[in-house]
Image 1 (spheres, rainbow, N blue to C red):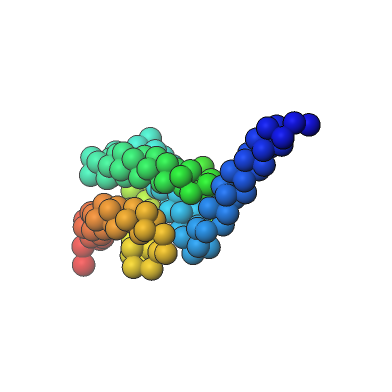
Image 2 (cartoon, rainbow, N blue to C red):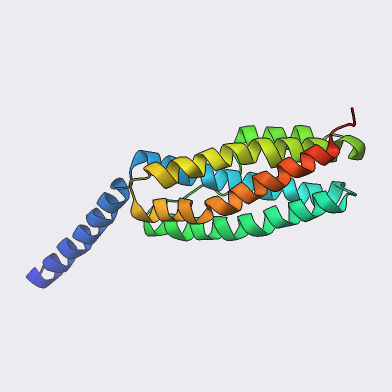
Length: 173
């Protein structure tokens, strides 16, 4: 083996090790945020696609479409960010989120809208807001922190819209 080949091999190995070290430099908390943010985004998209097929209410349809569109952009940006950190985020909701969607999806059209707005609009977005707020405050990686900060207003807006819609579906007293 020539010294040039050996040097080239050492350089390739150094690049591989540096890449692995770079991924290891992403704090576990930041990795957890990226994982959960991806899962939440996929869950909202999936449940909202279901809502588009089941709802007859224009307000629910508008919320669902907005959540699909906004989460598509957020998830795509998250993938790009994660790739730059040598991390591969999940490409689907968690098993728990899939189960919740199945329960909501099994409801009749008469009950679906109210449950979708409550479960996928309010409850899920309350959790997502907390997740993004924590990352915006505490993420160690500046790019992860900036991502969470940049998308927090969108998540808060989804929650506010869902809360307003939930009130519209509550029975009159």
